[in-house]
Length: 505
Image 1: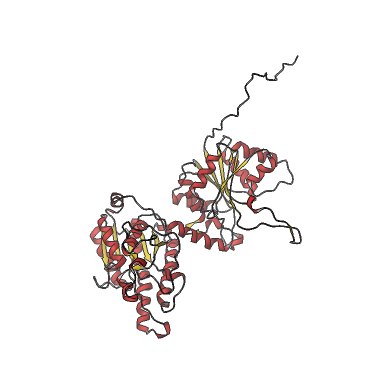
Image 2: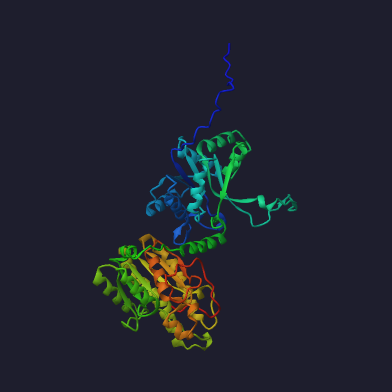
């Protein structure tokens, strides 16, 4: 006789076993080859903002407290490249760098084997989405306490149409219910494993989306969608490289701001800073501020020390003076510059040569001479541009051209010097109240100008940060006059000033 297993009316309903993952693993999928970008290397190895794209991506998971382990699935033939990036960047959470498969599905299967059989949280993320935020990572992991699968998506700003084989519209779905999928996609490991096991029996199985595999083969499983972000773009086409670089500039504008005088003193005491162009304006304010925080500062300029930045012998003498006095040089700052107005066709050769020599040859000369010193301290070169670098201005042609050149110089040197640990950044101040600007434009309403002290404060924030290859905009806070009571925060993005209102640092 078979025992009746039907529960009685007083029996308690079974409750699901609480989810207790052993750990949370981020799987970074880096199998792309860069074909659509027309590159000779995988796109994830392309440098943006001074670092390979994959390094930016890995750094997000490295910094996320919710992530315990990172596994990298790399394109065939480039595993060693990825390993070198991991080692150089000191990414301690990365436990494996292995070769991916021929397809996204094959790569996911390899990743599941690499994760191992234990119950855990798994986040799959495209390596070429380097602007992932910590907020998205946190919300994905938190959602796994309640859901077996989690996707990341943003609303569609465009109307989506469905077409037939002749490119004729067959349907226009309601846009309010449409989303554009991003990554990461997060899963409880038993769920994603079960979906792939079922998929293996389907001869027509093909997918590029892991949530799609769960949706198709485990149709009763709810997939939670959390909000992504517009910045979380996938670098796929050439224009994406440009956009990602600009988005990094926006993020970089938020250089870390320390909380009090003591914090700055702890960072700067014992450091040696050489300032070329330190007799007045931004350079002078930076030198004074750094001294108050305990740095040893050596300002040089044509007017105060007879230092011509375009002369290699003058630059070397200045650097030697600072090094012999302190035994180190941590930061070299170049605020020296001149602004000569006038139509190019009417400008004499002497004036043109002076502008080019001081504004461009000078920084190049300083960069070359400073590198050996900065290598010893893993220091930073800080240059200064102007809003005119984004668009040449009539009657300031050479000035605008040299400021644009400094931006390119910054990005190129950040790339060249990354291997030796030297950082290079560029400050782009809004129109600033400096003696040079007053000579060029005369007296202007104070409330329209940024204070030189504010630019100096933001410059120090960049110097003590880990940023490299960035153009950091500095803007006035709304309502601020030329001398705000609190130093202005670094701006968030490129600023277009009115025609003719170029910065004069």
